[in-house]
Length: 396
Ligand SMILES: Cc1cc2nc3c(=O)[nH]c(=O)nc-3n(C[C@H](O)[C@H](O)[C@H](O)COP(=O)(O)OP(=O)(O)OC[C@H]3O[C@@H](n4cnc5c(N)ncnc54)[C@H](O)[C@@H]3O)c2cc1C
Image 1 (cartoon, protein in one colour):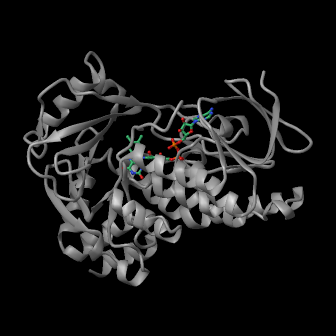
Image 2 (cartoon, rainbow, N blue to C red):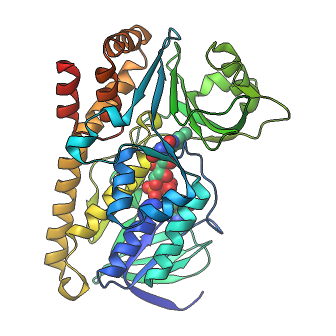
Image 3 (cartoon, rainbow, N blue to C red):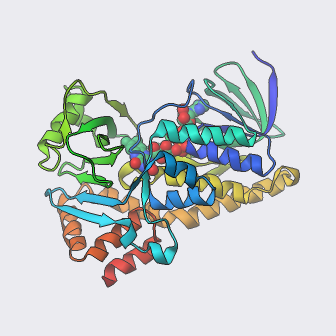
């Protein structure tokens, strides 16, 4: 066992939520440690599209110039309904001018994006240890004591769970809601036959499964297929993905299948919680709740909840237990106010994808006017608030 060490705040998980939260807390004067189970920053199963509201957040954190030099823009989304009809939509045509939101998203590479955030956090003065999985947690009179897989014993006044959809912290705090996990995601990077448009794509199918595409560069496309576990039975994930793509008239001639395609599979793809704070503890990012990858806003929510939490915290000098409890309650309330209406919309979409006829009708309705389609993609990309976006759709 290594010696015991103590920090003002310990963040579990070095994803976008944990790393941005770490940087903002160091700037607020906290002594922060991030612990990460993986041995290094690596790729993740993720469509890696950052919605315009996420880009806007990067701008507010002074990170946009560097990010724009690393990553290409995504100008909108091509939506394909289960009947195979296409609809092209643009973020710039949504309410961006009125809301002041950035008019395009970014196509990230998760290893480089998370790596950049890690460098930014370390540069701010925070500490990060890799290869340390949180394995035990206990509440103490001063806060929390943690044990890691590599034998560290750590104590902290404030524990932050940024440990993703399988969050150990949320389970330990009794905040995770158990639910059956019937769906999984298959992920691959495929070689495109033609140059990619700088557009994301979402292809919905009759069996309530869907494929999201994000152009990595001219030649490569990030492909995520969300399907039922039964869709893989009796075949490898790469054969199942290839078969699914070849069944779609819009996708079958898009990719070159030169060699065996490397796929990654992940499950669960959702995470429900009862709340996002506990005694001297808070959850951010996917750990604080994740509906499904359909609307492609997980990274935005990770960055948003991180900045929201730090804005509510009192600063280490004023961090009495009472002040901390008050600020954690404020964070929980703020998270609900800001994100609950979109989470409801995302759940409605989850019901809709099980009803292909409804999806076909929605595409048909959106195709009735280009501003309607753009208002819809503004809703998905968080360019405008749900009420406003629905109002814009109704007016167009
Ligand atoms: C198929 C799929 C496609 C997606 N596509 C998109 C998309 O296009 N756009 C988008 O915005 N979002 C997308 N998402 C969601 C996005 O990937 C997540 O919302 C985002 O990564 C959340 O960031 P985070 O920091 O909360 O968690 P994560 O990025 O998951 O980071 C959590 C970290 O915690 C670490 N960890 C876990 N347990 C422990 C432990 N016990 N001890 C120490 N460390 C631990 C993990 O190793 C990990 O590095 C997609 C998700 C899926 C499944």
